[in-house]
Length: 211
Image 1 (cartoon, rainbow, N blue to C red):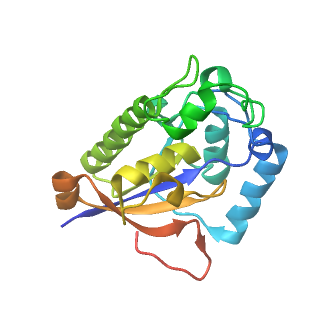
Image 2 (image 1 turned 135 degrees about the horizontal axis):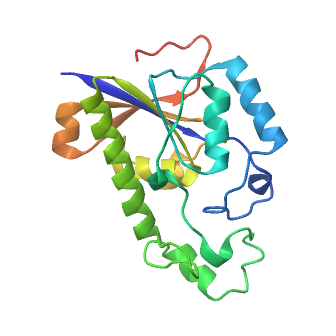
């Protein structure tokens, strides 16, 4: 049975990441530190390779994709963008502590949306449609692997839905510039819509995984 690999990578560091701000739809760039770290990581680790490269259209992801994979042209997918935090964009948890909706959102983000933002349910539905489209395009393409540069929230939630072993979103947390490699068995995918999470990405130089 033919298998496929999809490598999910989180974008590099931004100034807002360091300040603990909620940044979803706001189109911010990588920080100087973020760009330097990605270049450093690319020398210290083996990033997975693939002929197909997908990216969220937001600057921080496109910049990361081009730094890590300068020879590839990313295919932009709006469905891979981070959750839209609406009026809470650019604010920290401390700044939102007096907002009566904030604790309700923390306890039930699936059903509760930030003001003028996106509920967790709507966000999950959007990113799942985008991911399944990538899987189907990969299978139809004749290629066997693809790279996806996206956001931490996107990766954590996708793996909570499709990843084996089963785990909650925050169990799949990863640092900026890092992510996970997935193996897709076509029979298992068609039957159960699940995929094996077989490695952290990028890999240590001495580690070898079959692509």
